[in-house]
Image (cartoon, rainbow, N blue to C red):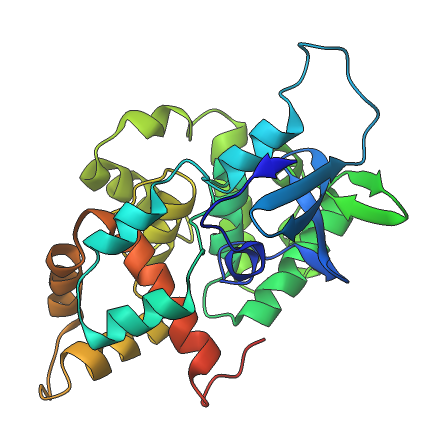
Length: 289
């Protein structure tokens, strides 16, 4: 068990950050790195179990610590929310998303997933993630459930565009394969990129096949913990235009980017995720699940 103050497990896992967790009754089953994990929230307590036999002391980090780090339970969420802009759209999103936290994702897993997400709805991204895990990942058992880890860059690099297309990636297969091979061959080191400034990190990510500004900002936010990063997809662009530029007919994408960078400040990533989740879950036009 671990303390989980100011945290909502279901909202966090259902907010479009990660795509492989499965809800079974009141529990969520998935993988954190190479470990199959079962999670259940009871108020401010998070019950955690993994599906592997106990390891000798000192060989593996304790599961509660892994889970607490994964869900960024150390982020001062109350202070972050208090620092967000005080306007109707943001306040409604904060109320709706109470307890939602930015997940600290493994860098390659996050990068690969968002390369696959281009022009896809959440339900489709979940299908792709599951197909990649089942075909190229490793199986782990927890209770009577089988969980698959996300395949390494090396494993994807050994595959082929044809085999990746069989996971419903379409044109994204070529980009995923090319990026995996850059990492597998040592031409790109995601861990070393952690020391880069936000500007240089975004530029380095955008140099990878299949990575544009939106994907780069997602990876910066969810994998590199750059909390100023503000990904702008169709949901966020619509929200910004409707809520902050309703009286402006022509607003360029650059103006939206510049506005978001200054208006939402140091925790723009949290603001973006709250606006995104609120819009996606409450807009009658949505076609995602």
